[in-house]
Image 1 (cartoon, rainbow, N blue to C red):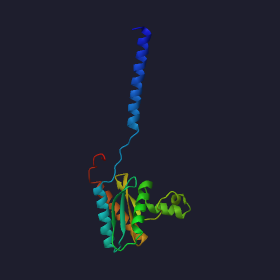
Image 2 (tube, rainbow, N blue to C red):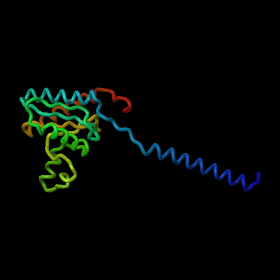
Image 3 (cartoon, rainbow, N blue to C red):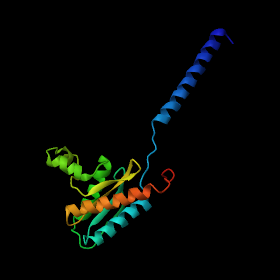
Image 4 (cartoon, one colour):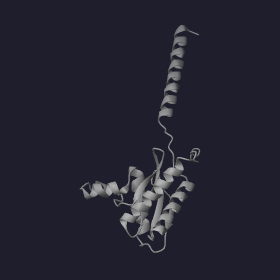
Amino acid sequence: MAPATKKYLKGLCLSLLSLTALHTVRAASLTVTAQLISEAGARQAVDTAERQAVALHAPCAVAVVDRSGILVAFLKMDGVRDGSPELAIGKARTSALLQRPSGETETNVNQGRIAFVTAGFMTLRGAVPLMSGHEVVGAIGVAGLNKDTDVTIAESAAAAFAAAATHTEPAGPPR
């Protein structure tokens, strides 16, 4: 083999190795692992909200979504308005996607930041993120007959979820 050919092949091999190494580094940095609320966690949050609603004599609709706003669990108690289910889902979705209580979004809109409304977010209080440690894993939204009761129920369920989440091992990767 001619020396020029050997030099070319050696350079080509080194270039391919560099590209392979670069691809490996990029692939690792292009993904993250995120916790998601499980079905069992969503049911636990709904059950806690239902118990709180019964104790307060405040029928409501309760929605739990994952961190991307997808519905995971839902309850519509007897005696709520026909629009409450959609409101609960919208509140939960807003809270999950913005990773903050929906009441903060309502306050922003009331102070003139109407872009939230045009972006399709539900700007009503009554939803809070569900936390596992310092990570948002979902959100719970409540819509009933009174906005203050909605907040109380949502916050109660979120606090119970956070307490339970700190005492359990995280599940494996989502399937």
